[in-house]
Image 1 (tube, protein in one colour):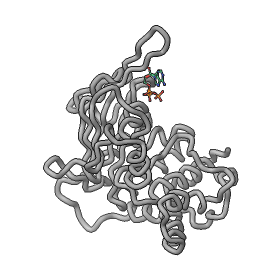
Image 2 (tube, helix red, strand yellow; image 1 turned 30 degrees about the horizontal axis):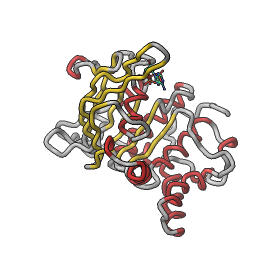
Image 3 (cartoon, helix red, strand yellow; image 1 turned 60 degrees about the vertical axis):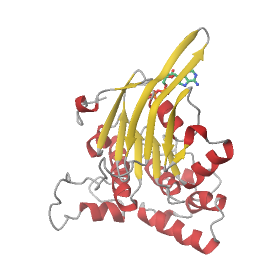
Length: 275
Ligand SMILES: Nc1ncnc2c1ncn2[C@@H]1O[C@H](COP(=O)(O)OP(=O)(O)OP(=O)(O)O)[C@@H](O)[C@H]1O
C-alpha cells in the first residue's frame, strides 16, 4: 500500500475548495471553519449514559470504560482523544453497536442501541451509522465505485440511484477519475477517501471514525481530517472521531478526553494540547 502524500497546497476535493473560499461574512457565534453545530437545547442525536465495559483477560480485570456519559448534537464533530488503551475504540464500538457494554445505555437517533437485538443492530449499522476505520477496510477485488456501492446493495437501493450516488460521493471526495481503480492501485489517502465515501453511502446520521489517519503520513492525514470536517458540514452528519491527530483536534467542535476509561471534565480540556 502506498501512502504517498497528496499535494498539501491544493484543496483536494470540491467541498474542500468550497471551504477554502471565504464566506460572505462572519456568522455570529461560529468559529471560523467550524460547522454550524447544534447546541444543547436541540435534541441530541447520541446519548451515552453511564457506559461501563470490563474485560477479563486472565486473572486481571481491565476497566476499559468506567461509566462514560455525554451527548452529541446534530452537526457536531467531536474528537475523542486519550492515550493508547484509554478506551477510545471500546467507547466507539459500544456506540456503534459493534459490542455490548456491561451496563449503561446508548441511544442513537432515538434507537436504544444497547437494547437492540442483532437484527436491529444490523439495520442501525446499515441505515443510521457510517464507519471509517484506520485500516480502510476496502474489499480488494472491488473497484472504488463498487466498494462505495456495497452499502447501497445491502439496502437494496435501485441501480440507477445507486450509480448516481456513487458518482456523486466519489466526486465529493475528489476521486471521480479513480472510480474504476482497485484499492491496491490507490494511495493510502485515496483509499481512506473511498472508505469515507462508502461510509456516507446510505446517508448516515452518525459517522464513527476510529483513528482514520493512523496509517497515513501527516500531510495526507491533515487532508483527510479537513475532508471529514467539510463533510460534516456539507452532509449535516454528526461525527465521533477517535484520534491522536492534532490536525483534527483543532478542527473539532468539541474534544472529549478519556483517561483510563473515564471522561475528563470538558471544561478542563484544551483543544490544542497533544493527547
Ligand atoms: N477484547 C479485549 N480483551 C481484553 N482487553 C481488552 C480488549 N479490548 C480492549 N481491551 C483493553 O481495554 C482497554 C481499552 O482499550 P481500547 O482499545 O478501547 O483503547 P484505545 O484508547 O482505543 O487504544 P489505542 O489508542 O491504542 O487504539 C485497554 O487496556 C485494552 O488492553
